[in-house]
Image 1 (cartoon, rainbow, N blue to C red):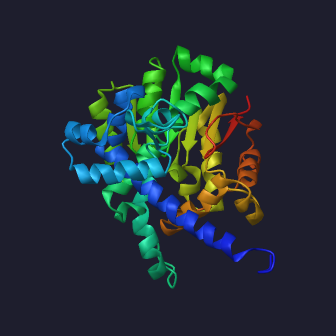
Image 2: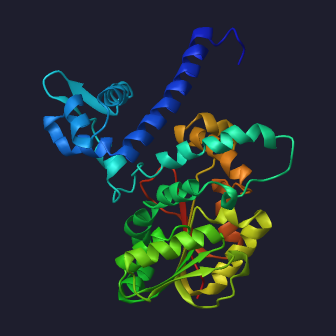
Image 3: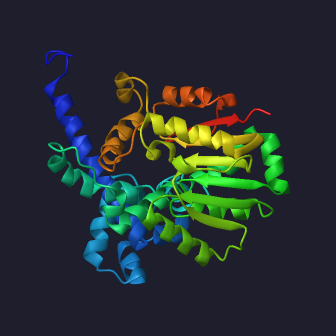
Length: 350
């Protein structure tokens, strides 16, 4: 597209929009970490004024005023002169309700935690080095674990009903393997959702293993759950599990050859007619598509982090082919409500 076809002012406004989006992300991060959103939500439709919010939380009034007015400008809060501030429509569920599959409250702290990667990226452009997550600040790992936490609800409540035979076995008592267990949130959810099942979480990153084991201890989960410190590329189980889940994990196992290896090992580890659930970032198959969907545009930025920590990228079409080539049966796209995920199902043939 030539300069004659695009007004300069439109491009200027686009750049301003990028600045505004960055600022809004940080205002959301601040509101979540400080309890400001939670306190405004507690006031309900009655609303709360800046001075009352300041007094209730013990925060400096002028800083509370700055945050409230910014959050209003970014349409996170609503305001009127008679009652003060309240949450904008749907913000309570999207930012504060952890049971909502579209909960974003765990994702914004991850997005803002990426500032280290964006700042470091110019230094890595001239090298082939990577910066593994294990070498990052611990807050990034915790933020990543929280960002993927709501996916467990999406998998159990929206995806697994599309594999009814497996779901019935899980309700009765079965074996679940979660590959890429991260901070352990998924294995805890699976154990609570299916109290008769046994759950194994597989995780290769040592700091994440520690996070997961600490989370299990704090959750007071019984011995039906274990965390294995191991790489999915070395999975040796055979005919052992009724369900294997990989949530934002397959692309972290290596390159294409590793993805093939992992899925072949997963098929072997499943019992006959067992189900695999693979949830990935919905990368488009063509560069042109990055401009056609805001989620795809966002993923273009996330890929900078993924590349820097040494992870690969799997497009939607590539994931379909990987599962079919691994000889899973009835390979299909799962219907679910989280636009930042692309989820597929398949079964091990009898």
